[in-house]
Length: 329
Image (spheres, rainbow, N blue to C red):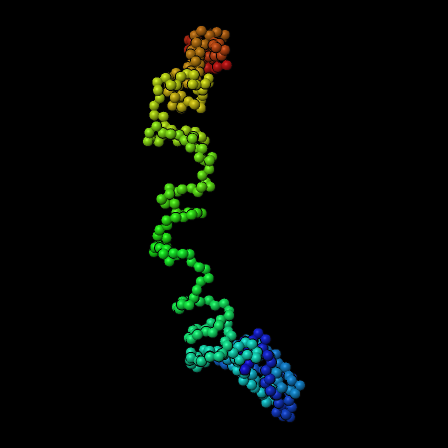
């Protein structure tokens, strides 16, 4: 039996190839063909060699052995060919026949293995009867017979009287010596552990704001300020002394207040425009005329540090004037 699909196939003796004309055994030039079962015949891709007495030796590739059987044919022109049929085993290891249980007739037939030692890595489907001894580790999926077992850890007294409901909770606890961590604080108002309640935190109670009634209208912010809405003030509670000098600034004055103030007394731009117009009129009435009775008359008047000039050009013999130029120096 030849190992199937072995990583390193062993050589196969095909036989001698004999020259027809003179009966000479050929030790060179022989071609090996391979015909796997169910596959067309082709030249072999393995290695061809010869024994000392002329027997053709062929070492196939691993892929060429991956069949249940294959035929090797050694041939040469003018010679009688030699052939051999190789049947492979279910094992890839040389020297092991192996058993393919899918090819065994009535593989599920009950066999009496009494007195037989089984050493295998494969799982045994089922075992009926007693097992004498198991020394290796065993994983048990479902154990339908739990009698005859014992635990090394003894249960405390009255353990059998412990009541556990359908949700897996202990139905009643009358005494607990020490509770390390309690993730369900229902009924205890989220009570803190004793380690979390310190004398420092207890002292904070002395600084707690006490409300005069049930109206909780005062809140202390993170900046230690009291946040509250002022609904009303007592008469005279805010006096002029409460305001610092220069407290009324542009940043503290609303835009609508400035608009109303400008409407009442006028803006600085409007006041300047009014002053300029009055000054130009006065320059013509009360100003100094330095070019009287000429084609161009100029009136100059100084008011409030500003010099206003009214220049008239195009004066004709009848005293009519045309263009007027107003200039503020």
